[in-house]
Structures are given as C-alpha cells and as structure tokens.
Length: 220
Image (cartoon, rainbow, N blue to C red; front, side, top):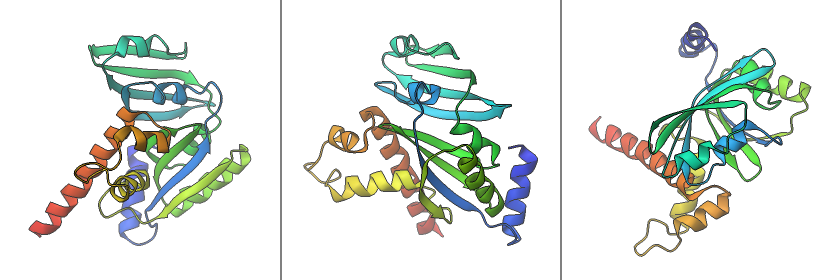
C-alpha cells in the first residue's frame, strides 16, 4: 500500500466514514514457503520489516537476531539473499517468491503489521478498513485459501496484537509471572508451537506495550 493510501485510510477513519479494523487471521503454511523457512529458524528472533507484492510474486525484508546467524543463513532457499550486519544480526531479502497465501493478503489493500509462524500455520496481524476487509475475504476465497478469523474489531487500546494478548494471558494464568514460576518459558513455547526465542520476544514486546499504556494513562 502506498503512503497516500495509508493517509487516506486514516483520514476517512477519523471522519467516521471508514472505520479502522484490527484483524488477525490464521492460514495454513504452504509447503516450501520462504516465509516459513525464515520464521521457523531455530534460536533466532525474526521481524518483518517489509512485504510487498510484485505481479504474481512477493518480495520481503526480514531482520533476524541470534547467536548462530551463519548457520541459519546457510539454510536459506535460493529465493533469498542475506547481508550480515554483525555476528548476531542479519537482514534477509526474499527476492521473488510465489506464495498463494501472502499474495491475496497484500493485494487486498490491508496493512501488514506482522506475521508469525506457529506449527504449520501462519498468523497474520493486519490493519484495514471495511472495503479492504471485504476485498481480502473475496481474494482469499478466489485463491482457495483456507483461513480462520481469530480477531476482528477495534485496534487494542494497549496497542498489543491479539497474538501478544493471547500469549500474555496464557503466561499470566499459568503462573509464569509468579515467584517461583509455575511454568517455564519452554513449556509456553511448546504450547504455542514456536521457538523459545520467538516467544521471549513476543512476551517482551507485549509487556512493553502494556506498561507504556499503563504509565501513559497514569500521567493523564
């Protein structure tokens, strides 16, 4: 989506014409999907920096951090290029990749916030208006993509995504924040089917947003 389109989306939302929708959907992970290869890397934290469609293929930029970056990069498919920034950080460019799940999402006009891999599924965090949402539903059906809507509603007051809130709530209810802990980080990661490093990053990111919102409200 172009900057002008993003501006128009929020301009009309403020005017009450096009409400902003926070959306999270779950899809299956296609075989040999570059997104899955990158996001499923062991012992690294990944972050989507950009994802766009080019005709019938996609291009994307990811940031990865971890202790064994060189080993992780050696496992990349030919559709990916990488540049090492330091011994524990690198960026990965998906040059051209056909993903029949990512394409309809990107072509619908939705704004991609993040994508997480959990077991054999992809969880997409999106921002859209009503028109883009309807377009997305139509395109997913046209492409034959099976999907579940996990959340559709107003953006969270805390700024946390549905996925972050889901994991934070589970960790809280299972006693992760108790002393002593009643559940280990690795056990929570196994429950959600993600790497411990990825779970740690999601928890840190979610807690930061909750704390920022808490102190902001306290100062108002």
